[in-house]
Length: 468
Image 1 (cartoon, rainbow, N blue to C red):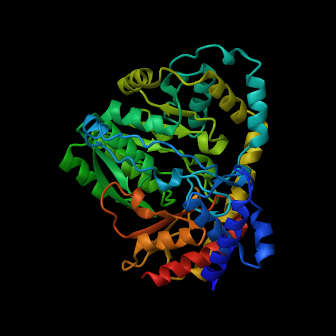
Image 2 (tube, rainbow, N blue to C red):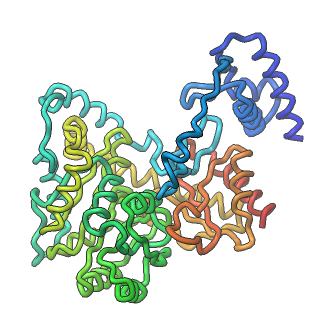
Image 3 (tube, rainbow, N blue to C red):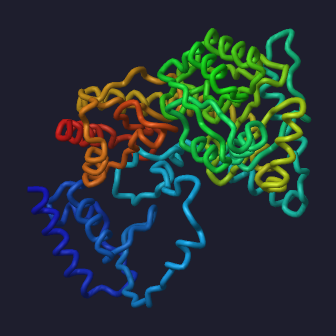
């Protein structure tokens, strides 16, 4: 019945479009629901059909518009095939970065929804920054000294007695965590050399490793983190000198390492004369736990610590801090200078302004409750409407749920059916540096419109049931 209704809406809108000028805005989804007596999902399906046919274009946050007809001479780019050769890393845009229209339920993004960001603080910080010399001055390669001090002080506040806390001169300010991963892999590992990496893990780390040309050795890691004995064997067998991991609310699993596991991993890294590249990009997203970075317990230079602010401050403020000691710091700084020279002084000034305001701590406390409500709503919705999906553990923080599906599930068909019904989900394969160990979905509970989570869970549950 819904397919017939969708087809009728498509036909009616085509008649409307035929008499409308290019660029005309289509009626809102709510208006179409009322006019045709159809469900929002049916209306959204009709709009997606028109978009796929090239009749209209969706502009996120604005609406859907009649596309202007254009006749363009096709270009022949065949000559580039031989010039470019085979890519040395995958070029496909990961689902977490793909933009969508307003008419879908988006559970795929790797970022929090706008309403979860400190918008007032960010706007005020940009206004203040425009009145300073940051608009014109070129910052030092290692970063603004005040921001270096903030990163060092934050980690130093978690440093136990007897451990020397990091200083400002141990900090390099970077243009986001992605740049920090690429720099770390190039400077500490090197092309062709082995890098141990949790599996599954952050897709950006997999991409950065491929671009750096390192050889990734996957280390199985689940809801509680990796097995330290497996990690030790991998160091012995491969001769690797670095291990990339996310001990605090890992993407995609949400895992938070226990203090005992953190100590065992740190002991293993020290015993093998290696580095732990600790990615704490989700540090600000604690819900029922407050993680303590492993780097706070190491002053011997074995832990290289990456702390990003982009997701918790604003996607437009791509700023991260990397803390390292000894010759490793010098190599990282040299690589950073060669790659990006320096980070925008304006963005550094804005980031520093936001995180040093008293209201920043207030925002993080409020964010904790907002994330908890969204997480719990999606968990309860899935348990009710998608009983065939298994959640190993409810994460204590982070932005995602990591769902295991039955081994017989056709994952591609599940993802496609969900998309056709207006729900965008992330297939778990993107988060494995080698072959996937099962069928998984990664769902972001920090996205927009949490009130639609029950509807999304029904659609996901139905798709899983149909394709097991």
